[in-house]
Length: 184
Image (cartoon, rainbow, N blue to C red; front, side):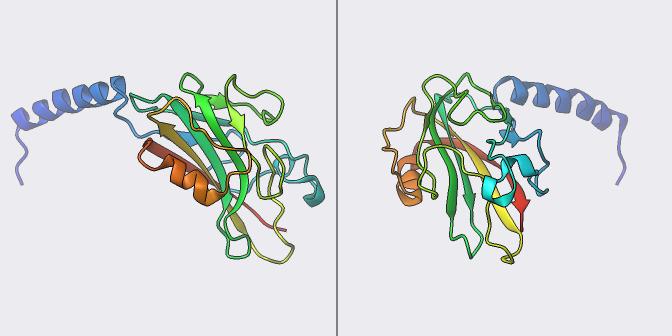
């Protein structure tokens, strides 16, 4: 294939313009990250349950490339390991659209105004860190942020994973996930 100067010039002009347009209008893919670990890596000890040797601090999270039209966020941390059977470690709803991070240890202490924490599978409101059964192997902890087209979800503190997912139906503009791993 012969590449002409005209074609190269067109690419040099078009691609930067396309990238700038998509970035300016929220066209990039939303991302969620943690300063504590990279996607697919081990969750550090401070973020695991006390019984597993940690401090049970909620994981620091940041997100970017929020899609236009986002009116609020919801967040979940779920362990889909076969032994855990979709164990919920954290549910949060009604995170304001202008929020782009949660600092380390935010659960129950430094929550964004208006954000609501629901009960986890441990039966407590807020964050419950990893505590997989010894010898059950490595567990994935899937952290998912949902950009929503509604300002609020009306859910009770005892909401199940199925009810949480049902409440999100038709309201999610985009979602992003990061996974940490842990085993004992």
